[in-house]
Image 1 (cartoon, rainbow, N blue to C red):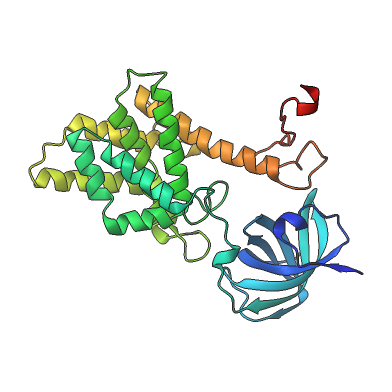
Image 2: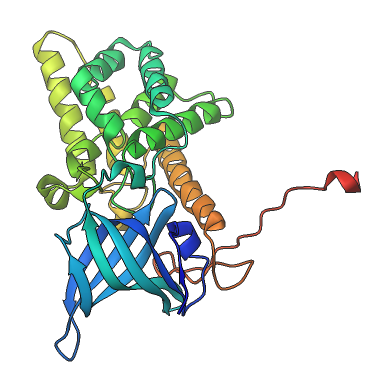
Length: 329
């Protein structure tokens, strides 16, 4: 069998079953299992800067080195298909002594530009109470942590810098919406958008790939974020700042309700316009990331549709209309 490679993940996903491939990839996840007949196996996820792909490692696979999440792997495998989705059946794998950073995806915009956007939004807040709160939360140390954090373990913006990228997108969307709905309080909207996912700096650890912390698993980013905001407001009051209780309740409500629905993890639903806007723009930012990624994903059921995605319960339409060509003008 002819071997093809080295190949990037994006190229693997465009290949047909039955081809043998090789390349270097980051081990994003591994799940040890036993088959019904007692054989050892791993379900794995491989990745590089172009995306990720599922794989399977059977007990007869030759593994050299410490096969742990976050390791860079050199591997040989066969392209296969499971439930209509392309995957790699690994035949041989060797753990490489390489820096994993080049194999990681990242924000489309430079972190320096995104960080400047965050600072500019904080400085734009005129309300003395909200501005004081943001300054207390975004200390230099916590700013660094926020800018390096992931927005999720999977699904959307799940890479270092993803939390910063997603947050700026949500604030940008909210600010543009205020041109259409000017009656809302801009400073409250922007502050709520900046802080809606602040708990994720405690929920997720990103040594190489995002992993839940103990706090993240037991408590979750919504509660962690509210606790962080509440604690800083108490400190402000202890220093003599008369932070209004009504403003505290509204800001905490925006964090608590930003998922929008009880079944999606919010303990309350949005109850006032600023909270509803934050939920809508947060949802839009995350969903657009997903839909755009799906459109660019190689392979699929056909040229026009992705394979069925069991997580989202749907296919995605891949065609992108570009408008009339110059020849048609």
